[in-house]
Structure formats: structure tokens, C-alpha cells
Amino acid sequence: MKHIPPLNNFGSRKEWEEALWSEVVKDLSHAGSFNSISKILDLLLPDFEKHRIGRRAAAAYLLNQGKSHREISKELWLSLQTISTIKKSFLKHGKYISYHSGGSRYTKDPSRKSFIKSKYHIPSLYKSSWLLRKPRQNRRKAG
Image 1 (cartoon, helix red, strand yellow):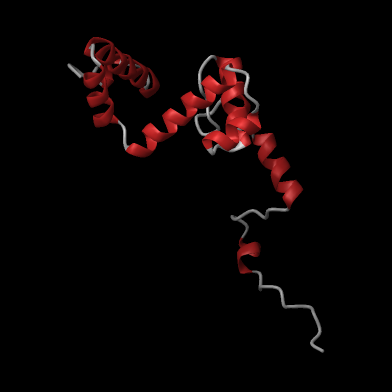
Image 2 (tube, one colour):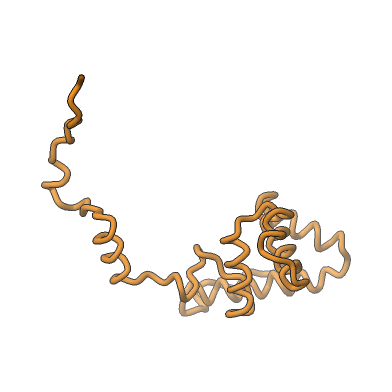
């Protein structure tokens, strides 16, 4: 990379990261040869990320070819959920959006949190009475 844009020139870290990504893409486009691009990606990405990117690209390609989720899952050793996420994100957003990257479906919703607590009876960790409660005794009778 020829230069990194200064962080203080941007209103947020997200804007800076987008500008930084643009610089990386420009460098890749100017690299020209396969070997140059490969060297840049080897410097930037560890093996597990290259592996993930490759399988994601292969899954998108196979989905585009009309293969079923099960066929892709068996061939690439990906879960059906991952394949479904790849398909939905490409159809809806035109790019890959994982569960962790915070797609619109996965935004933090306070009402969802209270629903999960009520459904699964998760006690609040901040209630001292819960922390001080004695563990339950085994109620089975020996015999």
C-alpha cells in the first residue's frame, strides 16, 4: 500500500475502514499479474481466511450453477446454514454478510433479548439473589 488514509480525516472508523479497503482494492487492481496479487494476499491474509474465502466463493459459484444446498454441503463441507446465509446475503445485499458482520436481520433488538430471557428462563446475572442462591440438591431418592 502506498499510503494509509489518516484516521482523523474521517467522521467514523467505519468510513476510514471503507477508504482503507478502497486503497487495498486499488493496489490489487494495479498489481497486474497473478504472482503480484498472490503476494499481496499472502501478506494480508492468514491461511484460514484464504480457506474461508475460497469456500465462500466456491459456494456462491455452485449456487449460481443451480446446485442444491445439500450437494454443496457435501462437496465443500459447509453447513446448510452457511450456504443459506451465503445465498440470502448475495440475493438480498449483493455481497456476503455473515451473522457476525451484523446484517439487518441480525441487528441487536432489545425486545428480542427479553424474549430469549423469558423463553429460556435465563436469570439476570446482576441480581445478587441469583448469585447467592444455593445449588439445588439432587431430589432422587437412593434405593
